[in-house]
Image (cartoon, rainbow, N blue to C red; front, side):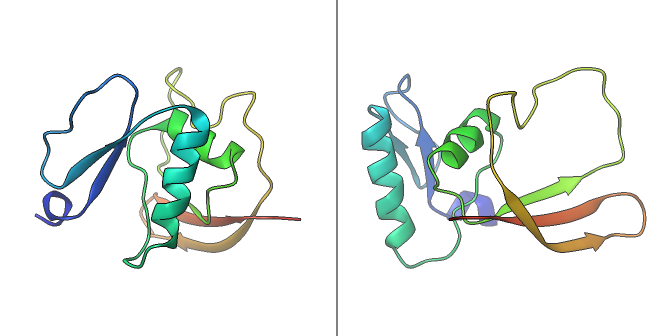
Length: 115
């Protein structure tokens, strides 16, 4: 499977090791984590994607480390759950692409507005 073979980074200050294939830990204080992610962004090899961590996405946005926000929106209303953007998360973004799959879900791509 593709996901098993690609390089993965786990941002954590609680885990000592990442046992999943091709996984590495990024840890430390906020400045150390930011510096490591900036180094990763300078490397060749394609996009860095975040899966399953709303808090990490919020932190990346707050630290201007996001180049695109890709959302897959499903027409389902839930009464509660973890929100991707908490009350304290702010970012100005511009829609650059929208794709309607014709049966409900919509893919949206936003880029941060800087300056």
